[in-house]
Image (tube, rainbow, N blue to C red):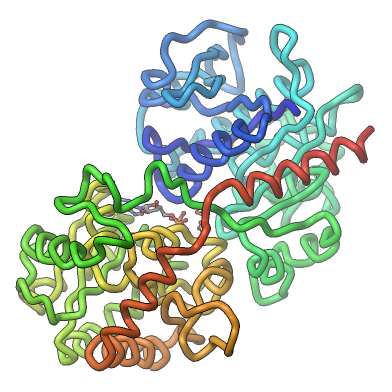
Amino acid sequence: MRILFAGTELYPHVAVGGLADVMAALPLALRDLGADLRLLLPGFPALLQAAAPLSPIRQWPDLMGGGARLLLGRTPAGVPVYLLDQPTFFGSGPPYEDRADTPRRFAALSWVAALLGREGDDGWGPHILHVHDWPVALAPAYLAFEPGPRPAALLTIHNLAYQGIFPKTLLSDLRLPPEHFTPADLEYYDQICFLKAGLVHADRISTVSPTYAREIQDPSKGGLHGLLASRRRDLVGILNGVDAGVWTPSGNLHLAFPYDLDRLDRRALNKAALQRELGLREDPDALLFAIVSRFAPQKGLDLVLDILPRLARLGAQLAVLGQGGGALESAFRAAPRRFPGRVAARIGYDTGLSHRCYGGADVILVPSREEPCGLTQLYAQAYGALPLVRRTGGLTDTVLDPDDTRPGGPPATGFVFNEATVADLAGALDRACARYRSDPAAWRTMQRAAMSQDRSWDRPARAYLDLYHAMTARSG
Ligand code: ADP
Ligand code: GLC
């Protein structure tokens, strides 16, 4: 099975959120199952550097506003990767900053994905074009607009909150046929919607958890619920996995005291080290909460700001690692001054510190309003930090609250609250604090259950492979 994987992030070279983790880990798991997979990514400087040496494959004097070359190299993990080297589009700046050429840079990438899907390269042609999220969602549409043989197209939605909506005046600049600008096709309230185009034209659609696959068909979510509901037979939710080569507390170079299930006591040393590193009071009895997150509205972090006084009253602590600008960032920057020694904030992206949070905090807070899958709660579990999450999307599918367990069923692996309200979050916070104080043995049991789960990428990779086989069987 030959697969071309197109997307915009690759851990650790270009990482904004969990998409980067998936783009790095899933190809390796598919390769382990015998798939012949290649990546297509934008030629961001960090990727051009990581994939060197690079050979030129094709070039275009003007690809939607600038000369472009397609280069072939390999990731450090040995996966062949095509990079669209178009310096005006990808030569500088963060991956998704708001720029005038945003629609053209990602339409160009999608157009190249479709071309490579259709024509292949030097005898290598994919059976499946698997595209991830709105920046490459036009690719299935470009494929459909050309006659002739083509690979089957799978679109994975990692986040419906980002759709890629742009003015219709760009149609011809983006090489989109005007006759397809209809409500049943590219048009979304008189604008062009990249994600919608992909949802209409992909042969199959997947998203990153079973619960999110159901939620996005509900009128209260998203805006594309009608289309998604109409395609429900082609829509599947496949839960993300954890790359145990990266996310494990044992032999971990970022942790002062690596540990595993048999040396769980060493977590206390990491907790003390984290408290010292962040200027929190070094107190083994203070329940240490941590957040590792983008500061996006969907993450529900505004609720946490509202419960800081309660958290302090309970004798707990909070460590925040995140970025994203805006009011939330300013509020978290200011919080440590209000609660010295109890609240610490580090603004920025820091992989090492994220490992130390998972390996040293007692609880990882994920109060998301929406969460397609969520990886931080899975990493928390792998490190024996209990996740405290809202019941939504993939959080529902991955965290079991003690109150939701039944005799003979799976064990509790975290804390879950229902509504995105201060009252519900506070309730879960109280329960976590009470259990930590009054029943250390039960806490330890939950830690062990969380750490013992099998979250490897092998299972999801098999599910994707089954899906690819079903798609190629159908398209003949
Ligand atoms: P999303 O993709 O919506 O941001 P996920 O939970 O799927 O949410 O993935 C988030 C990923 O980004 C995790 O690997 C997490 O550790 C990482 N991450 C988020 N914020 C930061 C940060 N400030 N520093 C380091 N890593 C971060
Ligand atoms: C998105 C989602 C997150 C998911 C990640 C990887 O960024 O917000 O829930 O885990 O993609 O699929």
